[in-house]
Length: 209
Image 1 (spheres, rainbow, N blue to C red):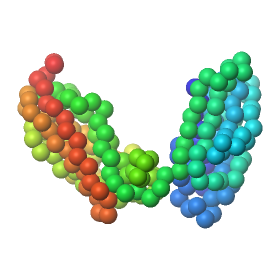
Image 2: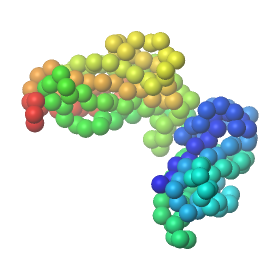
Image 3: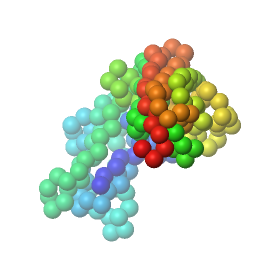
Image 4: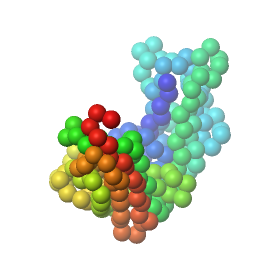
């Protein structure tokens, strides 16, 4: 396995982030990169330019690079016995233009035990999530379903779960949907000011299906 993380703020400050889209392009010029991997060696590339290859640490701790930031593509390639085994890629997102809805599955059982998670992401023209655009996203549900709760993964947020709107965190929120009947289409829509909205359909099925 191989996974890239970067310091949120310039010169190693802040928490680790799993994107290549810093909040302030004007000041983010020194990126601390940590690559988690169990491979023999890992090589880091920025816009196809190699930043060096490092062997695995004795304690398997993440490998570290301090590089200058450039928008584009950062890639980590893991090698075992000199052969490429796995890679991880992060791309710089453009300005968000729309909301993208995705569901973990397209059916939902009519049971209090069954919930489907719907993720709403602010994405650019290429479908990349922009973590720096965090509008209030509002959900509407029609058909045999109900919006059970909304979460954004921010432990510091005091916004209620039992509501139809939530401020995005890192460009994302998650809605929890339950079915209220054994059959029918559940239509879930998400909107936010200044962004193109999105709609997704779930199909209600009997419990045990």
